[in-house]
Length: 299
Ligand code: R5P
Image (tube, rainbow, N blue to C red; front, side, top):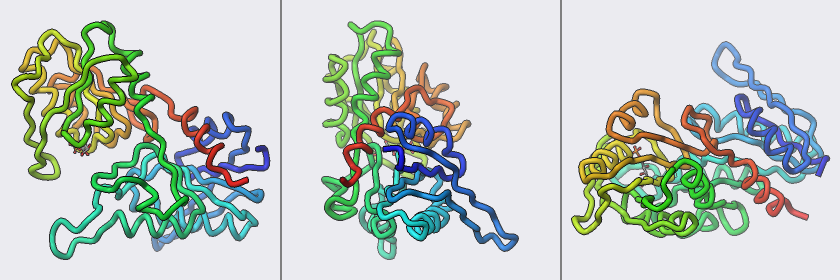
């Protein structure tokens, strides 16, 4: 696989190198320089016939256009196959117009990426009402890796009394996923109820039949954005007598002050995968992504 290049967008050099090392690929940085008028000059390393770009799409607005320029430059340089490795894939949540006039960003962004890349590889995309990424990107144009085994591994590493662990999902939609994590851990599980009341406000509850008293509750979620879900859940669980509440998340987007609020609400530990570089990173996604990338590459 040595002719395979994993080119790193700015800031992604370290995770790209970890991934490249695991699949025997080479890695090099993509340079993005800003002109005085704000336009970007993108320069890519020389690719072989096949290449990937590593670019997690948190805070995506400033990243997408340089990413498209980079993909085009790799093809100009001779790459016949260009894959996007985007451990976090932005804009997947807006899968319909909830109010008149709203753009369906999931559709728009997936179309742009599927035209620019042969394949998009991502980890646990947030697909609310859509059954699979194929339906969003087109058949065979995207690969989604489940993060459930990674979360289970994090829980096993950080929860210190296996007998008292219970895995909790923040809402009913998260039930299949929460169950998958709990099964890997060998622990019981529950889901809470959640109604979003605004970008940074949620109303949550826990069924009166769910007994968490004295338990080590391991909250699992795919995304922590404002942190409101984790903070509200932690508060309720502590009030209901949980011995401890820890949060295990795939994609940590929270600002520092929001993370402090989650901790102040009672979450003793907050752990995330390194799909996005964040102070809560506790587990590497590289091995999982490497296996998926090997399977993804066209023969
Ligand atoms: C929602 O369905 C997701 O699973 C997360 O719970 C949500 O995106 C978290 O957002 P926030 O941190 O803003 O509450």
